Length: 180
Image 1 (cartoon, rainbow, N blue to C red):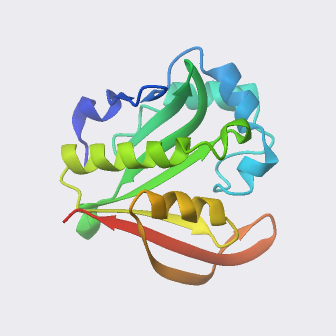
Image 2 (cartoon, rainbow, N blue to C red):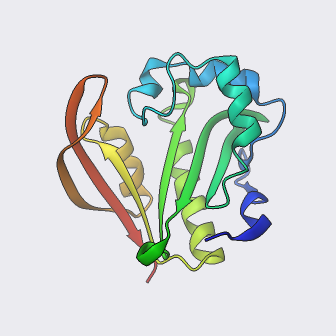
């Protein structure tokens, strides 16, 4: 679903929060905030722990290169303090996309992630031929479930024993929002 270059030019200004493409200069903050066990325990294993400056440098270089994904920094006061993105599906799922996100611990419980999810969801529904956005979260991540519910997503499924993280096999909860 190559959406051409508009995919990588998304910039959503929410006032005190900006969702924007990753850029040179984000590496130090990304390494600092990404190197958190609390963040790592709630994301997929492709997100390394420890998260090094080398990992951050690589991500900033490649984040915009996937033609089927939109990867944005969550910036507060000009600093990248988290990430949010969408992976566009293909084949018979071409009108479906998966949303994912993480935020630095220092910024938790401020409504930032909810606002980011709402803004990106609205953006994707307005600019792409997508009718369904979904997120899969680990059963123990109640905070992420609250974010999704506040953003208008509905719990659709519990996939029993579907993910293994840090040696623990748990259920995955699937939340979705449908464009009516």
